Image 1 (cartoon, rainbow, N blue to C red):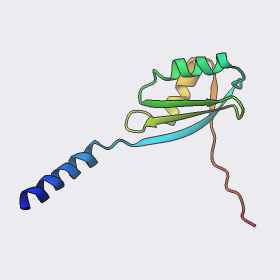
Image 2: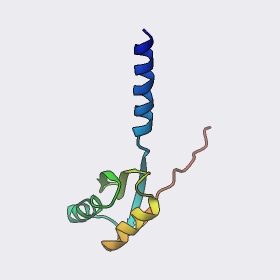
Image 3: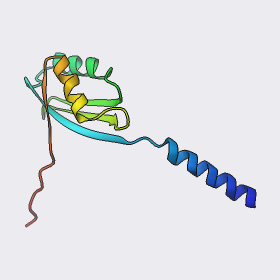
Image 4: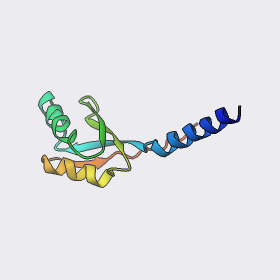
Length: 100
């Protein structure tokens, strides 16, 4: 029984040590993303930025949502990645709404 507990504790320690800090950020771009070619350009180039895990574009809201490994990159580096392909990216901050 003692061996099982020790093994379980060791496995839990390894899992915590290997856990990644995955974060999500939403951007708007200038010029605004307005067509499928814009989406392809953004997805095709930003996927090579270090730490990027997933890119979701939304033409309706003209936003780009990026999941990234915070241990490998940050929002400023992602903005620089947009700049490399001719876009000025602005992080969308969540707006608090009043409850009535």
